[in-house]
Amino acid sequence: MNIVLTGFMGTGKTVIGKLLAKKLSWEYIDTDELIEKKEKMKISEIFAIKGEPYFRKIESEIIKEVSKKDRTVISTGGGVVLREENMNELEKNGIIVNLSASPDIIFERTSLDKTRPLLNKENPKEEIEKLLKFRAPYYDRCHFRVNTDEPDLEKNVEKILSFLRSKCNLKI
Image (cartoon, rainbow, N blue to C red):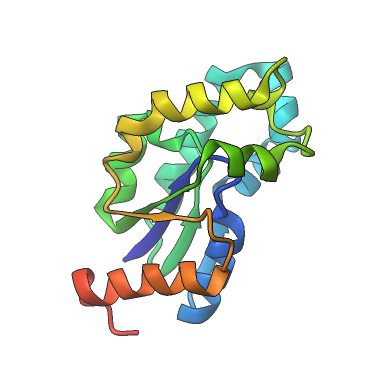
């Protein structure tokens, strides 16, 4: 079994994923890092040079690979939920946890990061709200949701572990 973290950028997938993996003594994988390694360029460069459709294709290939792992915490890119094939692959051997946060918190956490291609717009906060609204039904497919507005990492990880203990009979 794997634990898959989905959610919008700035919701804490990387930091929560690493802490969760450490507590479980499981492997940690970040699919965006794997994509950058495979393509030998940053995601922002992939978007700029090859376009979003190309990025999504590579992302799906990576998802297919990492879904075969076991006892791994997998942090995914924010848009991984948009393709049904990705979710089908991840669900085969994974519990999918959605990390969420309010548009204000996401804007606060991402406003200084210029490497996020989807937010390089005139009004990034408006773009965040638009993308969250569009992605909401996709995030609803996830097995469990944790709101990370409260930045207490330990508390957020404990919510996930508690869910896994009670609903998935995971012995932790």
